[in-house]
Amino acid sequence: MQFDITHEELRSFAMGFYRFSLVEGPMRFVRFSDSARGEEGKFGRFWMHASDVEALLARLATGRELIDRVSDGWAICDDWGDKACMWVMTLPAKVRIPAAIGKAHFQPTISKDTQRKQKDLAKWNASDEPVYWLVTDRSYAGGGLQYVIPVRATDRQINKDIAALIGPQLATAMVATNPGLFLSGW
Image 1 (cartoon, rainbow, N blue to C red):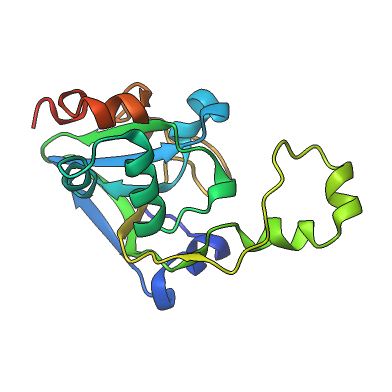
Image 2 (image 1 turned 135 degrees about the vertical axis):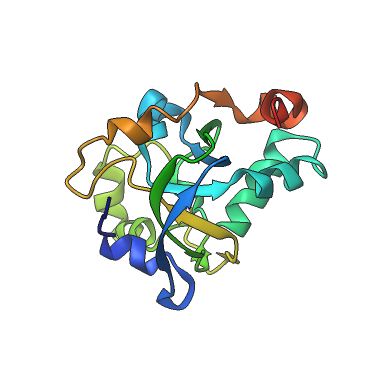
């Protein structure tokens, strides 16, 4: 199966470098999503290798520490959600899925789109945005290996075969304080 990446996804790779590949199981991927998105959070296209998250869990004690490390390593802006939900995609042996793979490009801690909106304070105050983010020049470093996986095709249709590989929603804080929930079976 082939798929296209969006312009935004292309910009998410360090120096614009990525490669298309078929990844084959057994393998696990993880993604974090905003709690307000509920089940929709699992259909995102950005994933990271589970072993990277396992390595972080071995050194961290709280969900907040995990979120901070994931935000920095995979350059996930603070205004993109609270990262309170975690999803695990498990590829059984010999199952193959397509992915665009590369290192995450650095990002500002608050996305450029949100900072641009906030420059017009009157417009921002009239919007339905629930949180006011401070303009900042701080950035998340990126550098973590990211996988763009077509759980949704570029036409936004859910790929049911790939979506079926994703387990139930996990609470990030619970996983961080009880890694056995995440590590079981490996």
